[in-house]
Image (tube, rainbow, N blue to C red; front, side, top):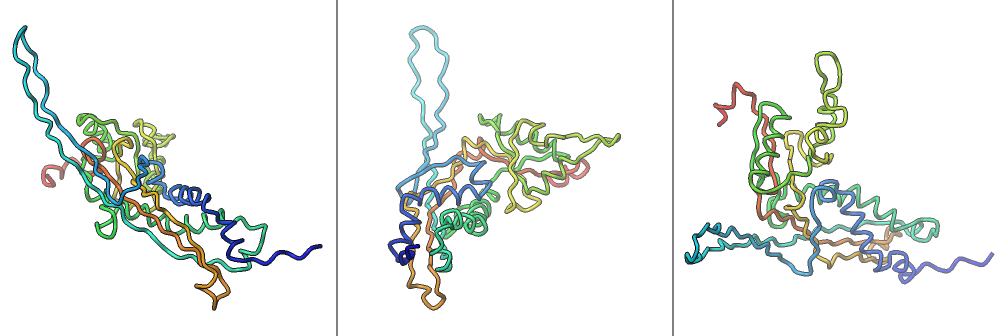
Length: 278
């Protein structure tokens, strides 16, 4: 049997080839359930992206030969800057040398355990600079006497603003508890899930706090991804550990230029305390 060729930096880069960078990015985003399911991808080559917003005056009904009115556009823009998410992962040189190990797949599993969870957390709870501006703090509230009533109010509020609610995002345990709700005879009220009962796709998001439940219009909330995402490798940086260092850098932002059409945070307020809370 011929001897195995030596593992060099060139051979390592051949396994994590630049063409695999897009696949690695997909693995990262795919491991972040909120970003993957509830947001619309928006790739860009720029550091900052401007989302134009306009609320033009309505046209008027006119009689024959009446002059046409000049309307104002009410134009503005919501500008979001991409934020860097980066880390270094060490992989043993033994794993690098093992031809049976799919490094792209192994690396993707590591991303799901760390970077992807942080991507969801930053998009949801980021405090702005160096993190994104988080959606939870920005979301307008929709209140109801119970969870179903509050979600219904959120769907209606988004609809009244001109949007269409598409997704219900909550901690998986919260969705499971809602699915297990039963009537007085012990029958499940929402056997297919609360989201399905109300016409929404459920998204279980481990990074959401139990008290934070979001109704999202996916068409109006974007995950901005700058296309200079990079995966770089070095077999010298961790020489003392006999390991290869894999550096991952990505730049992301979240944009919801029209919150009225795009997002609501659920607020359950029992009927007896609603006036006091207001």
